[in-house]
Length: 112
Length: 115
Image (cartoon, rainbow over all chains, first blue to last red; front, side, top):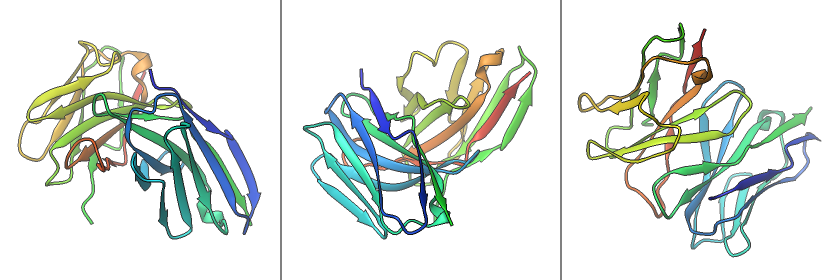
């Protein structure tokens, strides 16, 4: 059974800092990994998708990497802004079946 | 930009009542999903649906739950005889294919409160 862990559980940084969110998983039989953003009481916004054959994806100030063999992904946020404050979730699309398995998320607060 | 929509945004019901949560997936998508998130917990997979059939379901998705695509646009989740522990945010998602580079797109969710 896939276990997904996100570290840290919460993070508070001053505006402008670069930061790294971590996601680790136990089963490398994945099709892809998605990073989502969730604002309080709201839905899930897809940020980046990395296929299992890729090493990284970039979108604006966001860069996600994937090391499938070691079961790790990181989300790098450059020059953080108060508007980045949200919960960030990683989710794995498993090869067996067609479902996403989610981590518990990292709650990010960027202080102005 | 196409998006997944869900109605209602918030549903309050009494324990034991039946509820139907509605979703309109992105129009050219073929795969549909329901997930739920109990307050303070992880997002959990409930069921996936393709070609008018359930393709996979989790152990949470017992006989109390059912899904249906009643027409060409809607995808519904029915919960019979709701329990207090069914209170959660329910998310619908859709994708155009499965596996590989597929990205699942999520709706804004329906918050279900069972009293």
